[in-house]
Image (cartoon, rainbow, N blue to C red; front, side, top):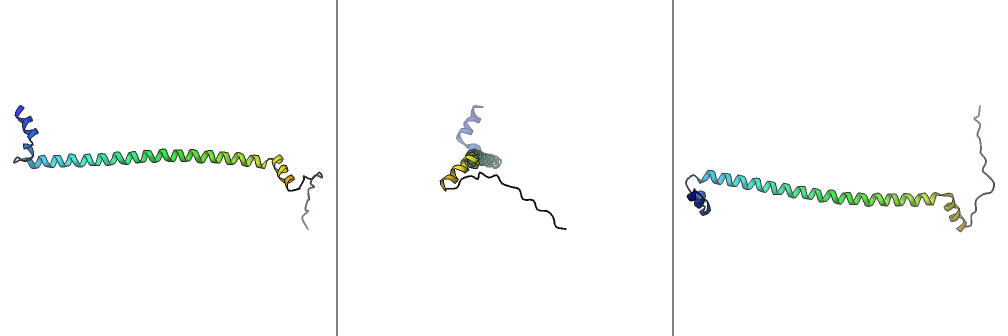
Length: 105
């Protein structure tokens, strides 16, 4: 047992006569490790991209709500009257009349 551990530490299993199968196994494990590392980096990139997009969506949603509330305030009758008074236009005191068009025969 002690001899086997000593041979592994010295690296004689890599240069012995049957070392070809050892090298194949080591290369296989190395390729699997590289694939695993690449996959991990890819997953990390996707996580960061998802977090960035979520923040962007939150910002856009708050800008949308803010714009919608400003529009609601501008569409109010009191706001329209105030804006028109600045231009010298006042609301009519005579109510509007409906015009009905009769179809021709």
